[in-house]
Length: 417
Image 1: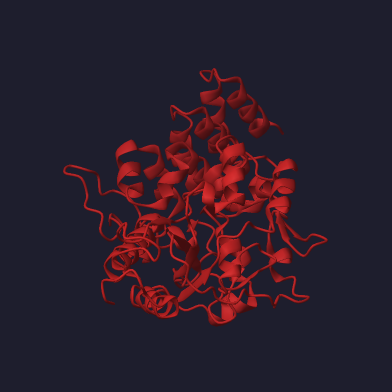
Image 2: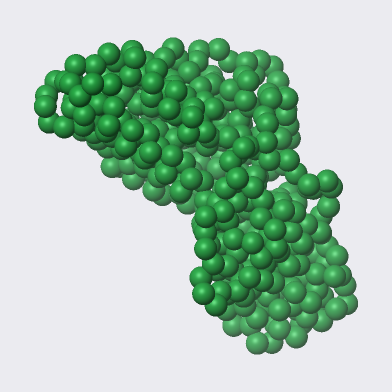
């Protein structure tokens, strides 16, 4: 494109989309930065406390910015919305093998924030060259900002408005030809580009697959306006990632062997089951034992002792979670790091308790000595679920030296007849 203050917005939009697809974004659309029509529903959701401990969602400045993109980028005139697919097949027997941990597909490889943002920034730099000056001034190339689930932006609302799909009953954006296994990224632009048609149809119809499949009852259907509702406080993804405290006792048995995130409401969706294809992005591939994510170099002298992310043994996962060096190696460059070592070990203890095998007693006994009360408490619960003489002996022996009252209460419950 010539270096000129004049350019054809329609031509530039087409070239930008073409470049985005060449960068691996199978889903691409453009929308306007108008205020969201869903902000009132979002506020009601927050007022109902359904965001749980995710207080960053309810900050007044964050809510205000979600309602008006100009609060995030002054002068924004268009929004490019992209979808980057991450689907991959589960190994045979997973998740039915209760001895193995299930890690959500999106977190088995490289941290998606890094992957998608790098690609979005490449698009921004391409725009810098394609449009050397803004349409109304000679002030230089256009301004842009890239976001990947890191700013106060209603990405799914923008995705629907950009034509990428509709709001499924599982609250995901569903594309009729791709399903829902894709990350969303946005590029805020100060260029006025022609928007795509919003996705108006709702293809869920009377289907209840995701509502019925959710083991914890986190999906509540649609409200009177047709918006899907999720109680995050009951969502396995929330419980295993964002929630920092003890997992409610009544929900633990319902989590099965899902130790980081949950794909159940996507796995059962007819569109996702039928149309999703394994991702061509190597960075999202599952990791073998001891392997680092693609593009992440191990630190000199770091541990390589971890079971990987491809249906790893729960016992080996807890051994990893109990050792700082192994945890650092396992989580470095991965979205799994978000849970923190103690949070992840807590999750694995729940998985081991749901497995209920005597084989888990030695590693759970080791967890009773972890420096974090959160880990000790959930290890006690898991040993109570195993219920063998060796499990009860481990609990009785440790109870005499346990000083944390919240942990002692877990011991008492686990030892109760």
